[in-house]
Length: 498
Ligand SMILES: [Zn+2]
Ligand SMILES: [Zn+2]
Ligand SMILES: [Zn+2]
Image (cartoon, rainbow, N blue to C red; front, side, top):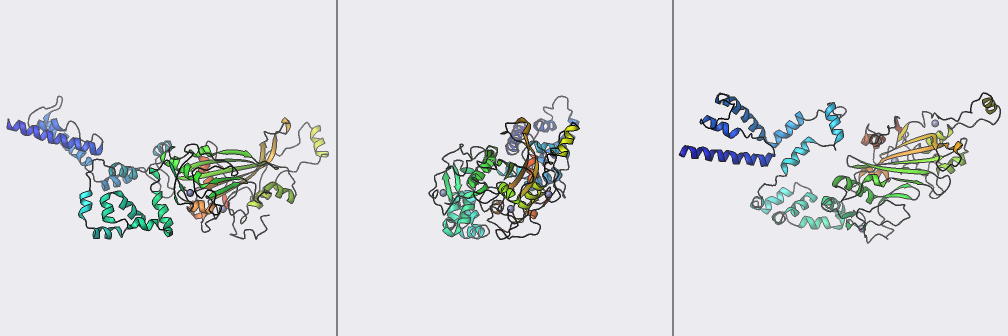
């Protein structure tokens, strides 16, 4: 009787251990057949179809399964690194074709991070308040000496006991007007808790979103407040924004919204694709612009394509009328802050010079008519080695492609003249991760930062290639050259651009 009781109690304890393991690891690592087989050694409840002679081998197998369940976190991480997807050390590409195809179907994930997230967030972990309180404030002050001010403030806010031990002086330090960068970094960590707020970089605080879910990108001339900001009418402290073309800007708040929408869901922001716009300039030469946005690896990429119908054989003055806006004396198409320094305007003029000049209305046309052929329209225009390659601005993450091609003019009434020659300037820019206007990409594109080296920062993977590969369109296959190979920074002084 006492034997039976002891067997029962041991089976109970095994079962409770099994339940514990299940709740911890969330899978059937501990087999159900474990208990009956243990009993089989005592001569009871041998499962049908299994003989006790098999017991030893089965038991040893179960031991190995249990060992798997009891692996430490460090072992798991090491195993994930070893057995995880094999990556080419040179190119960073997945070597296994199947894994690569699967990873294309999902958002990118990091196996190690996933494991960390899974096992760090243990809801059944007992509270550690007593352990925290057992260390003296002196010891805590020594511990917090090794972490940053922002981390110290976060630690102090984690619980009442920690606030008591770490102290609230770090919060006062962060609030000091001289520590705006720390304050920004600290407040940025609350981002995922505040879906109804947007950070205002002018006031350095969160404002309530007044247009939540209805935020729409509008022309610069239209008032479009996203929150009630006391500095909204203060011309000395404007909201950070990027000029796209004449009369069109991209406020930084929209970069924030697009990236938050992607990171935390649409409750926190907007879908980047809804920011795409197509518009035509009011005045001659009536450039047509189309913008598209796309979030890639936590950064917002922008593409602006500007098209203008043109004729061959323009005079230098005609070229300037075509390329420069008389409103703000900047190019009609979208350009980064460094457009004057490099070859951009010369490349546009070079591309225009390759337009075929229509033959004199004389012998050639007559001969063509006689032969029953139409005179050549110059459907394919071949650009030279100077203006054909794509160019990357060395001072910011922006790439340009200038093309001259036949395009359909939908506003043309005469069906025989539907296709016309047009200059198309496409610009791709990386606008950064939206955490602050001080992020290197945004600061470089807007011209606020002059030590950005795009050639080393971006590396071999082009922004244009990344952008175009997400759509069905085939990417532009051109090689990429430096927009400013002589590294001249004359700006307004150099007259070459005009
Ligand atoms: Zn504000
Ligand atoms: Zn050329
Ligand atoms: Zn630039």
